[in-house]
Length: 65
Image (cartoon, rainbow, N blue to C red):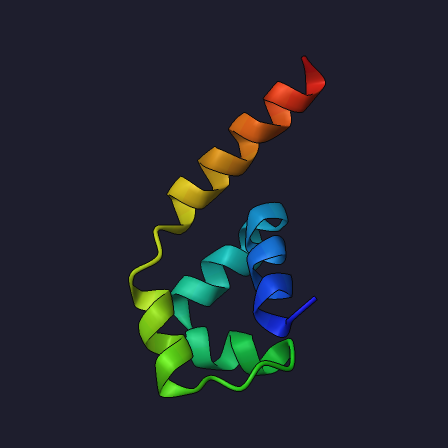
């Protein structure tokens, strides 16, 4: 699993991490060992973390059904 995949997984499972990523992306990425390159930071700017979390929750409900 790539570092970025791990970050996405953590965003989906850890609301406090997701909030820190929005508030301070460079520091948060470094905290988990991901180099905050300009490309990564630009990609994060376009991500709606709440929408990702809602989608993950919806998939979780489908699995439980």
